[in-house]
Image 1 (cartoon, one colour):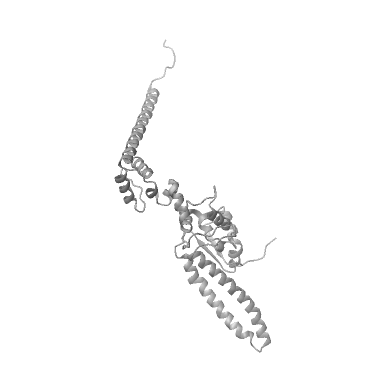
Image 2 (cartoon, one colour):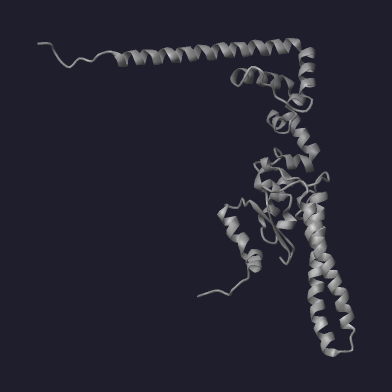
Length: 296
């Protein structure tokens, strides 16, 4: 049975995202920013996103639409007061529709502004509020899930999943602890910084490995100089200062790390030579002529 015909605009608002999110297994590349009743919908590619995307959405699209609706409402108010009953009746119906769209758009603009300039609100009473206000910045290294979580009020009308992800990010419990992400550090800086001081892997993720774990950073750097290239360095903010301070203040520990790394390199080289010798022996065995039988 053929369904009801839809305009392209209607299909985009109502059905496109359901198809798109399924195609990308709940990790879509187009984010569906929508007002509460889906009267205003903007699909934005995460790969075209810039630090000004939300501000441009407000300035170039939503604010002009609001001005247009405000103008319509002002004109309709005049018509509602008309002595012409037919004209005033038609104006009343259109006024109700325009006022509803106006109020929906005002609410949407407020949500976009909050997410853009300060951050998403708690999802419910059990969701901790963000510890710090911060502008939203798309970071593709964080992935679709984390980035969408911080926009959950704008996505919820068409995509409810990010709301649950934001709550998990705010709670940071067990396996659903996303404090490795740059976005988590933006909204919960103290919590994430405390964890970086305890967990070297988080220190690496957030660029403070040298700051909080200089001995490990020095050991890693020496090993990677051997495995990648001799002039390799772990570059972070103030890493040169931290490196110099560690070498100056802890010369004995630095020497022990050098010695341990030298032992590791010698062991690795010995294993490499042994493996090569075994390959050479196998190759020599393969080159020996085989006997086809007894001589006559």
